[in-house]
Image (cartoon, rainbow, N blue to C red; front, side, top):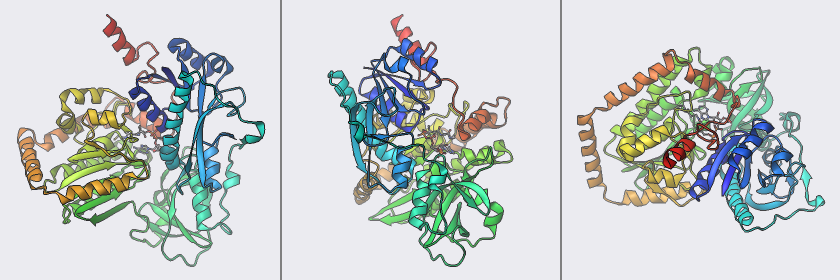
Length: 563
Ligand code: COA
């Protein structure tokens, strides 16, 4: 089928649909919902069989849904209507939630239902639920809806009394009442608004949006509810009526403020607080059955200078452990998305901060590559983007699950050249031809393609919840084998590679190009980062996605093939 993905932005669910629909043989193009005229033009140019609206913030115009069937992916069960479905579910502590694919009509979310799925609602942030359960449910429901459409079936209409409109969830309706709200309620409120728009509250007498709340397990006594009582790495502990919660990130309510580690946002006040080492734990090492598991759960997968240095230290320590197999497990939602662009944006000199950040992440990649007496595995339950993909590839093996999405490209960030030894690792694991293809493409990639192109070595049949256990099992089996020959070969291969071209030469050449990105005349990287961090919507769909538009690489290829 010819499928147009209509979306506010190319978000995680849209990326996943883009991968899965293409790999199922559909012809897929993307249009950002910029205005009605642009959408109408896309319909004219592409003439799709169906529009799949994976992530929209406005209604589809009648001029479009009257011409072509439009599927709306709604993150709520059948009958649920409104723009903040998932926020409400998290806030109200629903035990089960769902996704519905319905047909667009004049009334919002009121069209007949093509397909739906339900799932148990995990105690997690809205964005984590969206990335895992909602995405899995949405993909299967969209495929079912497409099958029904192809089979000339019709969707079923719900009765009016089965529908329930939930309005925009305002800050006032989820505001924390520090005097009465328990820790569980505070967590739920913050999670209902994470990653966007954040939960508006008052910290140290200043209005701020709160994100990244995690349970606090220590002893919380004294101080009034709402007061900060301790710090741990990037996080502040906030007293509640029955304990405390960790707050990892915050954004001051002032215009132009950026989401940053909470101890950075309130640096002066935090400095006076007692530090609880390991209270908010974003790095954790555990050794079991001959395998070591290094978990690093950095908010949004962003790895700033401090995160990279702490992780390198933890990696060095893990590399000295008895474990024969080291598994780098990242976080559940994100393995790594490379440099921390928010911290860079907030720095006095973003160019200097970028430079120091890339050195820190390269140090980590180099430590992984140079460790020859352990078998190292990157296990990607969560997605990876830009430098994060190549950091994963620094290991001997990359394990992935079918739902993991990789974005192995830097160019979307203002033509960033990239480092993390990608010029060494890509040809080594993907072969020169694939390396060239991967470096030029700017598209997300699912597990099957990553496997075919050498970016992943093994696909573990698991979902977001079962991947950790599947990884443990596979690592245990690996650790039980005699790895002597494998490790000898690995060490010999490293020696040969080093003799042919030393790692420092790759690093120096990549960094020479990065220096130009950071300090050169062309400001593209700084502009792209500014827009990314501030979520400034794109004014047109990138031609790499809008295959129906003249000048898109896909159109150029088709024309070349035809001639
Ligand atoms: N630094 C800081 N924040 C980052 C980040 C980074 N490198 N990568 C992602 N994030 C944040 C996003 O701003 C967003 O924040 P929110 O919680 O306020 O919504 C959140 O992580 C999720 O990212 P989003 O872009 O919405 O996820 P996605 O699944 O739609 O897209 C990527 C995934 C990897 C394509 C996209 O996040 C991306 O391009 N990241 C930047 C990668 C990069 O260029 N890194 C620097 C060079 S190494």
